[in-house]
View (tube, rainbow, N blue to C red):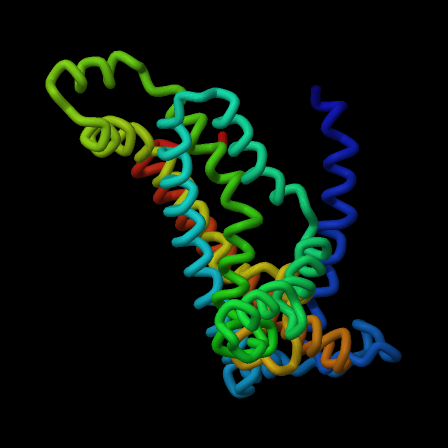
Length: 288
């Protein structure tokens, strides 16, 4: 069994731990032609710039807002859908709905972004519908800073809530039917059974998923944002990952971009440790 793990360990060492040597440029005024060995050492200056530059600070704020709303909505909606779906008695309809809502999870963000651009563009399907039915002017969903965040959150929910719903649905399926029978004998309605039997039984899984989501609070989804955003919505849509991409790879500020990425990784690492401790204390969840 350990021998079978060797290819995965080699892959992680090469592609995950090997590149960490390059983190040293976060403390340098890195110049590609000088390399890491000869670039000027500037200590924590790059990290200080994170809070001095308005764009970097705004990217951190945008990341927190988008990520927190995604986490909240991404927990509530799957729970509600799992409970509603579990109430269906027609197995065929139940499995059909389950497949339909789960399918978008397997689509890449490049594909989803292409679909959204076609639908939400100025000459897209939604604007045509609004113009024909209500006579409204075209709405620039992906170019309006005020509409970009809701668009991002709703599209992320559409793509991913099916996966979360499957986890909660499996939890509901594992509930002992005798609990519902006892509640029904006591005169509990379906709503009361959901409130007093289904939700309390799901609570440990809800706590685990919610607390583990804290580790991704600074990860608002690079693939999604990168494929949907544009300079018009930088004020509300630019996140840490996209800012690092522009600052380092496009603008040549390699040291500063690495510092921003390292700052994000450090905070995320701390949050992951905290979330695992909370999950262990509250729900007795542990990996090892």
